[in-house]
Length: 141
Image (tube, rainbow, N blue to C red):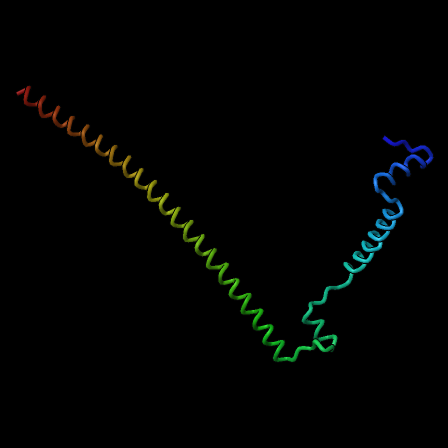
């Protein structure tokens, strides 16, 4: 491991490993300059390209009909995208409602099965009681 002996041994070791301190410093300075430029640009208001084309009056100037055509195309694309998304969402809702309906019908069927079992048990108890009463009255006669 190289030691920093007044910079001589350290610089020699770095140059053997292919590290150039001057190039590194220049690269850092370049990155700082670019970062400053980006920060300065981030504070400028963003103007959409269509507005820029109209406002600059350059050769890229769109006529009113071209602009209307472009806006209509963009609106049509947006509308079709929204319709696709709506269709997907409606499909999801239909699947969710169907799944809930199946679960509800299953719960209703289970509840009716329990009620039927209780009714059958009650009817059997009433029959048994009626048979007991009939047999006991016959025996007493």
